[in-house]
Structures are given as structure tokens and as C-alpha cells.
Image (tube, helix red, strand yellow):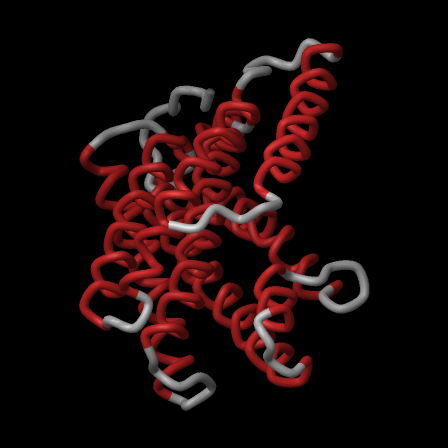
Length: 249
């Protein structure tokens, strides 16, 4: 395998960025100061491995499908861990994320917005899986925190005869809204503040800016639809609160 000649400067640059990140967090005494550094190291290793693997399977539908399934399983596992491991949480996150991904995939490829090819399936599938995971995690953690912080209010509704879901519905709606804020902001500022990696990568790959823009707006729409459904399902599932939940960590 040929090693790119610019790999050394890349490693040095990433190492400096990681050092700055860790230094800033350490100076401010932020808990979990080593987490970003470990995330960068882990991401670098994983990208190196997946780059080698994808080189040989990029045009094979079966292998692409397997890769997406592995990505989904890991995403569901990470999201579950962020809200607390249990069989119920695992089922909730798996169902919510899968529903969002399937909805977007059916619309994107069913309408012909993108041609169903292994390359497009891998590209948009991986992006949507990652964003659905993040939105599911944010929804779950925000809702749990809100319920804990407003437990007196929730108990008051329960005492008045409201169902568990009715007693948390406003908190659930706020959690969904707040979880979607980063996605909404990124979509609103695309082209003005943000040049997404998929857009830039497509141009670097030789695709015309117009075609790259077409692909990117489909991706953004897919992320938004998947995220909305995922967030609502997580909030609905977690809204059935009967006892005060443990605070998130």
C-alpha cells in the first residue's frame, strides 16, 4: 500500500490541534479533559482502518450494506450508553435511529433525488446514521435533565391526574426542539458560514459545484427528516416517566 508523502505533516498538525484542545480544557479544569484527545486518536485509527477496507468494497452492494449495518449498530450502542444502558434504552435508540434512517433513505432514493448506487448509499447512509445518533443522544439527555430539574412540576401534574406522558409533554417538545438546533443552524448557514465536508469533498473529487450542491442539499434534507423522526420517537418513548430518573452523567 502506498503511503501518502504528506502523512507526516498531517500527523503533526492533528497532534498540535489535539494538544491545544487538551491544554485549553485542562487550563479551565473541565471534567473529562482527556476525552477529546482519546476521541481524536480513536477517530484517526478508525478512519485509517475504514479507508483501507472501503478501498476494496466501494462498488460491492453487499459489503456496503454490511458496512452500514455495522455503523448503525455502533451508533445505536453509543446513543444507548449516553442515556444509560438497559434493554429498554437499547431498544428505544435502535428503533428511533433505524426509523429515521429508513424514512430518509426511502424518500431520497424512492423519489429519485439520488440514484441508488453503492457509493451514494454509503455516503448518505453514513452521514445520516451519524447525525441521527447525535440527535438521539441530545434528545435523551436533554429530556432526562429537564425532567430532573422540573420534577416538582411533573409530580404536580401527576397528582392532578395527568398521565405520565401528559406530565412531561412540554419538556419533551423542548428537548426535541433543542436537539435539532445544531442541525437547523448548520442547514440555515450552509454556503454562508458552513461548507459541509460532503460538499467540499465532492468538489475535490472532481464533481462540478452545481452537482456537489445538489448532493449536499439532499443530504441536509435527509439529516433533518431523520433527525426529526428520531428525536420525536426518543422523546415519546422516554416521556412515560413514573419515577424521578437518575441525572445524566
